[in-house]
Each structure stands twice: as structure tokens, then as C-alpha cells.
Image 1 (cartoon, rainbow, N blue to C red):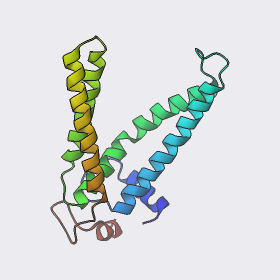
Image 2 (cartoon, rainbow, N blue to C red):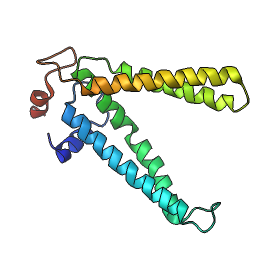
Image 3 (cartoon, one colour):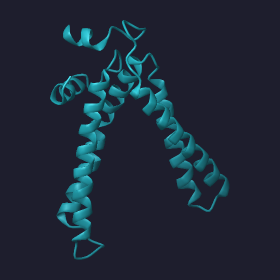
Length: 165
């Protein structure tokens, strides 16, 4: 599966959390995500750096920052769906993704509370943050695993299933 084919397949399966996604589908879509975020980051950074007044961001920075938020909100569902399907392809539950994300949000929440000078919240946030990083490493390893050969409990091999669509 090539770049444009993978992007089209992911976007056509925008809210499909069932079935399986090949490694190429997952990684081509991940590449698109990285490219868009890098472009938006550069726009924001250049806009901030070239702003005459650091308190007032220039138009480029505003467009980059707003674009980042809009892109994140527009892609949070397809990103989650393709993660689920990729995990399914290696016969893993999509709940691994949810667990890692929830632990990460928990860590962020406790770090935010620790701004109130609460050492317990800071420690909890730190531990949850580290667990989330470890979970991210586990997810990366799962995403790198080859597909299970033949059908598994999540469906047919993606190349066969996608040719029937």
C-alpha cells in the first residue's frame, strides 16, 4: 500500500475501530501526521520569532497555532481508529492504546495540580507520566510487529479484506 492509498484508506475508515490495518497503512498515515505537525510547528515558531512584540504573535504564529489545534481535533478519531486497527492486526486489543492515553492524561492532570505546590500530586504525576512513556514504547513495539498470518479474532488479513471493499 502506497502513501496516497494508505491516507485514503485511513480517512475512509475515519471512525472504524474494527478490523485490521497493515503496517504500511499505519506508518504512511503516521508520516502524514508528522509532516503536518512539523509544518505547523515551523509556522508557529517563525511567526513567534519574527514578531515585533513577543506579547502579540504575528499572523503566521496565529495560523500555525490555530492550525495545530484544528488538525489535532480533526484527526484525533482517525488516529485512534488506525491505532486500534494496527493493534488488532498483530492480535492485540485496542484497549492498550486507550490505557496508555488515559494514564498520560492522568499524569498531565496531576502535574497541573502540582503547580499548587503539592508534592504528592507531583509524585503521582511523575509516576503516571513515566508509566505513560513506557506504555508508548510498548505501543511502538506492538505497531512494529508483523501481522498475524491468516485471520485472527479481529478479522481477515487486511490485504484480502481491503480488496473486498
